Structures are given as C-alpha cells and as structure tokens.
Image 1 (cartoon, rainbow, N blue to C red):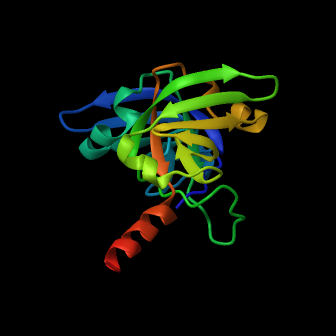
Image 2: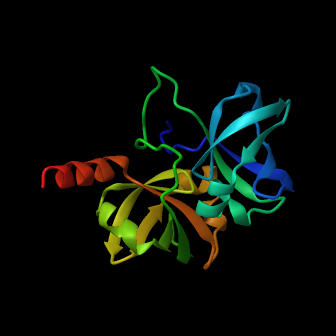
Length: 196
C-alpha cells in the first residue's frame, strides 16, 4: 500500500524487452532503503525489486502490467515517480493507493500558471463514475485532489511542491498516464450492488 506522496523521481537506465515481459533498471537515491522483494510504486504501478545496486534497482514488468499500464511506453532516460511501500506507524498523507492501475489516461492540457500548473486528463469513460470533485485520484502514482470533472475530463491543479517532486510537469499533450481511482469508491459501488 502507498500514499501517493512521491519520494523520488528515478530515471530508467535499462530496459530488457522479453517475449511477454520486460526487465527495467531504475536509478534512484532510494536504493539504499530498498531490499529484494520490496514493493515500489513506479509511476503508480506496484513492482517488486528483484535486484539492488548502490544507485539503482531492477524489477520485472509482467505481460499483464505492460498491457494495462503506460509502462509499455517507457524509454531509457525517462523520469518515473517512485514511492516505497507505506510502513506501519508512518503518517499517511495523500490517500490509500494500491499501485493497481485501473486504466491509462491521456494529457489534454498541461499549462503553466503563476504558481501552479493546470493539468487536464481524459480518463477511460468507465472510470469517470469513481471520480468526484475534491475527491482523490492517483495519476502516475501521485495522490491528487480533483479540481473538476466533466464527463471523462478531469482537471487537476499541480502546486509547486508536486511540480518539484514528480515528473508531471514534463507531461505533454498526448502523454499517457496511469490512473488509479479511489479504492473506497469501488468498494462502495460493490456494496451497493450486493444490496440489490
């Protein structure tokens, strides 16, 4: 489990594409805190560290993950948002983020304001029902508050802290982003259907 508060922007240093999977290496200042077997959120996708070096870690990306997330489009040199799994007893800012991507969205607008960026994303239509104004959403693993939703368009305001600590300021129109909607909304829907 994660909070959506990004701890580092890592850099993809190696990609080995296999028949039905890939192996990626990510350079990060967090490597000293990672052990083999640890869960790490990479652009909002929960991956498992399988090897560690002093400056990086290696993780497998399975076929299902490649099919369902934007990790299939990463390239060497790309910046990725990283968060280590939540530790018991830690403060929990952000919101509950599992690292289980619900779909891939697309940047419609990323414009710079005086103190923030306006980020407009088109999310998959079937996910729109889980998103509400002032609710939580994870975009590439970043916990954000929804500013506005109109149909399948979600508007988010990125404050300076978010812009400084994540890769979201570099996302251009047409960029693909991993979307994870609020877990609680999905459980409420299931409970409501069970009562029918």
